[in-house]
Length: 240
Ligand code: CAA
Image (cartoon, rainbow, N blue to C red; front, side):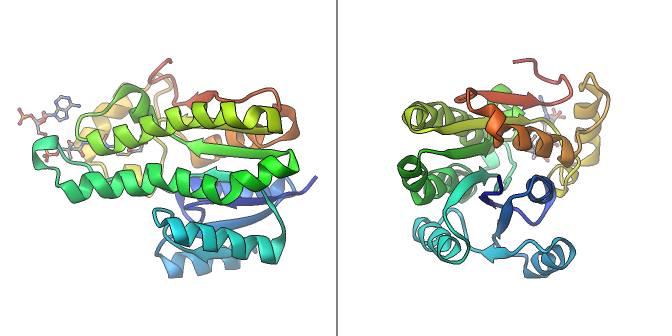
């Protein structure tokens, strides 16, 4: 059965692969994006998936953005909180703004999107929320106190909201990707990235589509008994 699904940060990287996969599953998918209008237009032209621009770290913008989508397409039954940024630096070089911005967008975005959509799912008795965490939220990462804290927060957020949604048919799960071949990972300095890849047992970066397949399962009817879990897709880099 096709449902209305929204994917934040949906026009690039992992989000783009998730949008395409959910569309192939028969859902009416809408991609949210933050700033790159040119890429969003190209994405819509290629996929036919509408893209809507707002900052997921902005609470009011999330409420308004989701309300507009519901007015146009119907109730949102599937939310994939994928939007995220990095502002990597060691703590002694990290500014308060770099700390705050990563928390505001990566973790605050999950709260804002859930506030906009969870009450409706609860009332209708069905919903799927998938939050994209990270291996670096599970294991920590040198130079990422902001990102690791936000992603670790996402894993806690997931387990807490899962308990609230369970009796209403709303499942809430996380995926913890490892290092995936995206622009975000390409921004890691090459010598640093080489050392990281050398520690991945599978011997390569992951592909965005490999995360999208996990999302497809977690958002399906078949996953109704799975909630509050974290699916680690990381090539064996962190077995947790
Ligand atoms: N463990 C221990 N020491 C480390 C280290 C590590 N993992 N990484 C770097 N260091 C050391 C270096 O060896 C160096 O030590 P010396 O001065 O004694 O040689 C010192 O730390 C400084 O290293 P840099 O020259 O790299 O310092 P920098 O200030 O220029 O950059 C950094 C620091 C920004 C953290 C940079 O190392 C970096 O970008 N690292 C990668 C961080 C990372 O993995 N980000 C993931 C982004 S992708 C993502 O987040 C997606 C996801 O979910 C997986």
